[in-house]
Image (cartoon, one colour):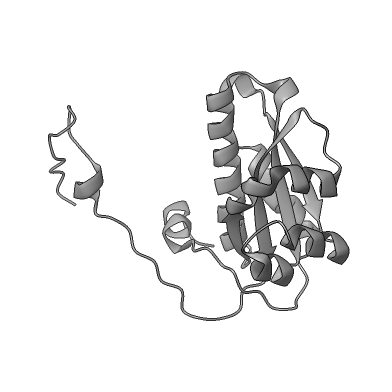
Length: 177
């Protein structure tokens, strides 16, 4: 098993999956990791819908430009903000982001591929209709999960110096790393 830092640095968005199923044990591990994300006042404002039904996956694929990714996945997890559990909207949205990141990192550890689908939010009403979600829930994302097709995946990031300041905005970070 790798370290947390190695897992973070290895994580990539995976959009191509094999036909292999994702085990219920792995799904439960992913959900368990999600629920242990931090949240303000420990309110745990999230709800998850696990989608494995092929017809439902096909219907959800029509809600995004990334339909091929959705159709190739074996599991979708729709992530919702439960407005009945709200503490502070912005803080709760950030907590859900942490829960999603936990899911993505858990997938890496389990040898699974995943991608955070945000573009599907443009069709939130349609997604909610397909999944029969009550009005007080706000769609935050859909996570596509599957066994990754083996291939080289690369990514790049801006340098720390481009993103970081020291003490005040405009004072470039000069940390030696």
